[in-house]
Length: 324
Ligand SMILES: [Zn+2]
Image 1: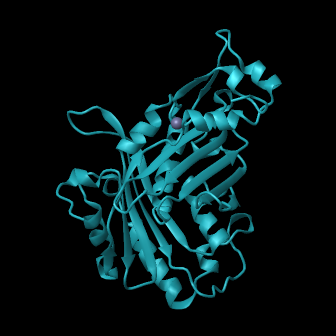
Image 2: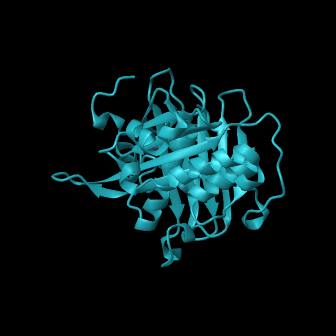
Image 3: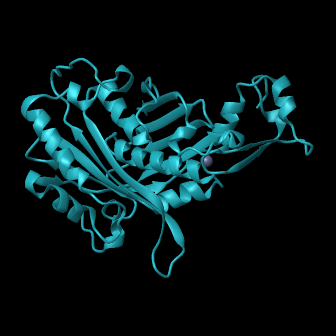
């Protein structure tokens, strides 16, 4: 893949491997995608921040799924935030862009003065992988813990998959001189390769959950710690770009670890909603409930929570006992 200009790194995920240790990783840059995700809504700042973090995590985690698979993050809370949902649609063909969408469900009246993560309260962090029609989706869940969505994701991989994982993210509104303020996000993910027979020690993390130290020992543990110390030196502007290309960032951080990069995966904003899908989801309701949804104009309306698309139906064509 030839990258001619710096701007070509926007909305990409770059996979890499550190040849000195069994560690793989990704560098993600999201800006246009994030701007589109967030511009569909008018979220309060704390909610925007959570959705941005979730979308960036989704790009970093989703990159490994196979063509046409779907990976979703779901964060459910009992605070002001009830749900943050994201989807990553694997590319339809090699070289095609992956698609990301995200939204949050929250009670504005329950927002507190606390930081963004505090708005979630107690709940769980889940990853779902859908391999397509005729398969049972895979789902893994861990409790909300650790003070950020990144920490939740790290706990998820340690606990559910016994894979030491580290995220270093930066996101926010930024202004390129002469342009309007837009959302930008960048992040690095490090993950230890799966082991044939992981020897998992006693869980020492918050709430009795596994951490990397419970999974890796000896040389592996040292390699993991060394890569993490190197990542600790990253600065927010290096993560977010656009001046520093992800390839240069990897050399800056990990040149002694022999980083090897693979083809970058382009990502775009994309929603999979359609009138037929909305119709299918309404088909589960009996006519009596459909009747309650009819507006003064005599129609049933539905808005896509991800992209804001507006759908209108004739109630006579909806419901579980409707005649098509
Ligand atoms: Zn939609």
